[in-house]
Amino acid sequence: MCGIAGFMLRGGARPNPDELAGMAATLAHRGPDDHGIHCSGPVGLAQTRLSIIGLATGHQPMVSADGQLALAANGEVYNYIELNAALRAQGREPRTDSDSETILHAYAVHGLDFPVELRGMFAFALHDAREGRLILGRDRLGIKPLFYVRLPDRIAFASEIKALLPILPGQPRVNPVALRQFLQNQFASGEETILEGIRRVPPGEILIVDRDLRIEHRRFWSALDSAPRAIGLDEAQAELDGLMHAAMREHMRSDVPFGLFLSGGVDSAVLAALLHTHGAGRIKSYSVGYRGTAMAHELDEAARVAAHFGLDHRPLELELDQVFARIPHTVWAADELMRDYANLPTSILAQTAAADLKVVFSGEGGDEVFAGYGRYRPPPAERWIKGLLSPGSGGFRTRGQWSGHWSRQLLGPALGSVGTPDRAPFLHAWRSTPKGWSDLQRRQYTDLVTALPDNLLVKTDRMMMGFGLEGRVPFLDHRIVEFGLSLPDGLKIKGHQGKWLLKHWAEPMLPPGHLTRPKRGFHVPVGDWLTGDVAARVGERLAQNRGIREWFRVDAIPALVAARQAGKGGSRELFGLMQFAIWHRLFIEQPGLTPSPDEDPLDWIASGT
Picture (cartoon, rainbow, N blue to C red):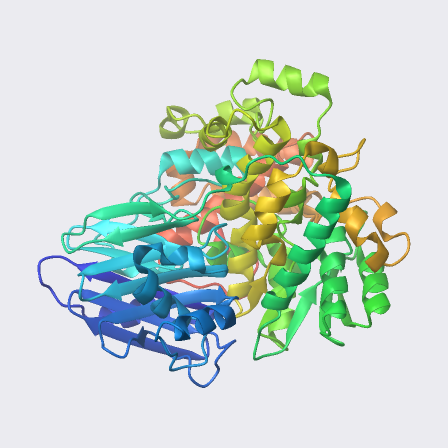
């Protein structure tokens, strides 16, 4: 697990190692164990390393024996042992113990088709000096991030947006379409990001950059290829059993100890059971709850699961001020604007776990893959009405998260005149699905290509890597994703219960009665904090922020604060403005400024001097 950065220059220019060092310095949190720079011809690669596999021999960037191939990679290729055996049979002998070296050899043998051989979570930059091309690639589900930007003299890339800021020729500019999507959807999705010109490498694709900096997109995987199957319970359960155990065996490959984030829900409990079955032993586990709030938590359920499987468990019961002191650091860590309140406790869990470990398992993806969310099974009348009022996505993801009233009051002229629909990513995903799919499959797919990579996995990757901690997500093994998406609806939902097959399969492994407990999710008591004097002080400082003054109507903020104080809504709107203000200061006004993990968020809202 690492951070990567670099660029390919135009017209025979040669890389400046100091520029690469500057980009790498912004990614030091992703790779505190080692760093390296490689320059060859017009290409410069940089990497900061978190050593997980091949501790002594995995220095990057890696260069092939003939000097023609160079690689900077982030993530894990879980099937590197099997791939290396096949590659040895074709004369490719690994020189290191690192799983990343497998990427080099797979390309040498299979050419541009090589990503289909890789199982895992990865983002990489591979320079082929002989062919004069740079290949940027990202894993199938978008577990690992990769961004790029086209500049007059180069194409540059990095694991995080903040590493691209030092080489931009001017001040970054906000993308109003992405800003609208953040406000209304909680995140922006697709290739464009919150900053004009900076784009995401799409999941499941490689980008091939030639000598003239032309970019060819080549897709190597798509969930759209998962055809619906007619499969019975017994066959499905046997297949699921084989897939889950195979994925867990591969995900447990590590030369360092690992632990588990244990929420008390189904998915993390399943991971605890599988880790126990595969001999992980008394590993460390971590869970979180809150003091001083009426919001229910799952500390008791998590402790029960931990005791059942003999885990070395550490529950964290947090004070509200402790949670919200994380806001500036999580905004910095996320890079992208996304309003997932769970960033805050995840950041605290990550820092706590990183004091002991480099790797933790986490249950992300289980709900998307096996249809666990309540939004996947709405009553027919609700689906019909929503589809009628907001057509194009079967009544799914139809409503913005800002109220119409506050959108009209707060959005400035530039935001109010954005022509692209806020729902555009969801509409595009929905309409791209095959005609033979059910609405349930379409709902799963829409989340798999929008909310999963651009919200949930941003939280998982950036909050953990903000403290040099690798998160492993076995439910997002692409074989399991293909299986879950292709299942008949009746094996995913029965009555009012989602994720039915997974629960049916897992029940014998879990503590008695665990599956009868209601799903609570990873909630954060924002409403208990953002009220009274705190809301008033947030409002005062928002008016002093340059980004707020440019994009929003400052004169409407006092009314928003008053509504929030009176308990008449406004929480999402006020929190979103606060996030944007802090983000604008960190990424537009003062790039390079880094909050500590514990700050008073009110100190970071107003623009700096």
